[in-house]
Image 1 (tube, rainbow, N blue to C red):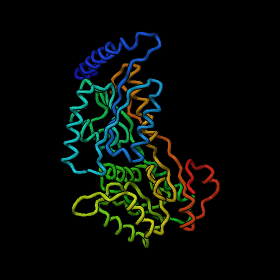
Image 2 (cartoon, rainbow, N blue to C red; image 1 turned 180 degrees about the vertical axis):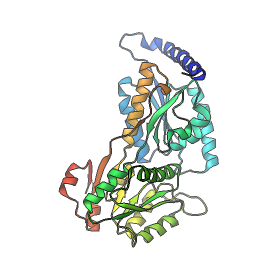
Image 3 (spheres, rainbow, N blue to C red; image 1 turned 45 degrees about the horizontal axis):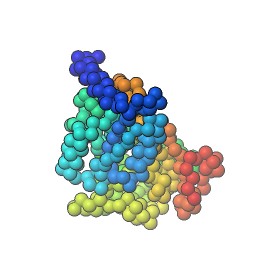
Image 4 (cartoon, rainbow, N blue to C red; image 1 turned 90 degrees about the vertical axis):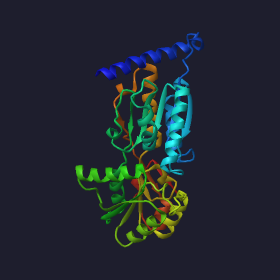
Length: 345
């Protein structure tokens, strides 16, 4: 370990043992557990299904420790202005210094960019576990002495293979995603995966990152005559126009379903809420559970986060929506329905 990393590690141990010494009165009985404080910092708002799933996964992984878990939100989908995010992150950094949690779980790319990198990385404490990160971890200088976590992988190859089994005659697809930090990263990962590992089961002839509701509507109309399948990513940050107001996701999908006649494929767990035909979905719960397990290791083994390897999610959840299939006149084979993790009717 280089000299700076060794000094940070030793300082971490001093701070750690001091924290445990402060817990000693509460642990007078042999069976008592130390009180651990875990702060979950979300990039998005508490009503977002992905956000809730991460919190649930963290809580499940840490349930044996019975920690104090607190959640805070940067609300970047509903309030994406850069100056506002910088202000909220700065205020939160000061609060973290006052709270001195044992572990901060930093969810999604926005928190890395605005909070962890400028304020928390390479400090003696707290220890940081990231999750839901779409960018290459090296973009943020991860791993660092006090940072490790969970890289988010979308199941592109598996998803296109699934819809090809449902629609054997389909040959082409377009991928649409909203203009956000995560949106850009998943679009880049899709293109990089094709370049590294060869084409998918369908030819992905268009990969579009769109900013506004009007752009989204234009693309949906355009692809009615150009592709066989619409693959849909995140759409929670689309803006109405020059005023920058974010259009509710339900409004976007209500319009999309009214106009679109193409089978739809999803990759984010929001696909289960918004009527897409099928998908192999990444799981917020899995992201949170893996991050929570790393936090468990940090707190029980008293090791710095940077000593743990970065991991990637593996489990994709197969979704089929039978109501959407009926509306589009698509016959989903029974063996796919039988094997699916989520079947909506």
